[in-house]
Image 1 (cartoon, rainbow, N blue to C red):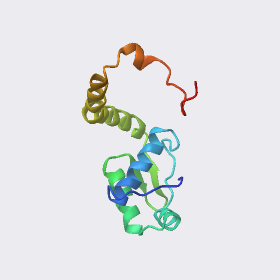
Image 2 (tube, helix red, strand yellow; image 1 turned 90 degrees about the vertical axis):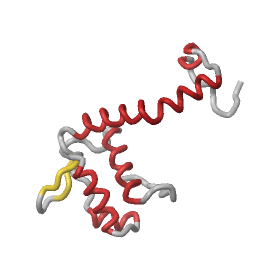
Image 3 (cartoon, rainbow, N blue to C red; image 1 turned 180 degrees about the vertical axis):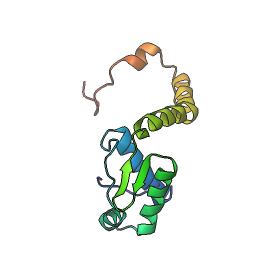
Image 4 (cartoon, one colour; image 1 turned 60 degrees about the horizontal axis):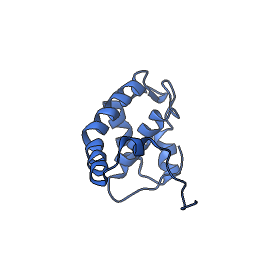
Length: 124
């Protein structure tokens, strides 16, 4: 896992769960890969092991990871497909309407949206 900045906007277990999901979507955690142990994550990020266990349990409840007795938690074979479907649906339901409203408010054309982004820092 990489460095995580915790925010006050959501419970830490949920932020940890979202971080693991992001790693799955980005291909950093692939089907069959082991998740770091609860103790390891708790020690590395100075979290209560119960917080880490709760995040992992939610991932298991959603069949994104599976518990292998005595071995730990592993990414399931169908995790990437499930996540992609779920994330696409969530994007279209929650995020896209906000983006679309902003596009319309700004009067942006399809041509403007498809053009390469201008250089950062106002370079001309």
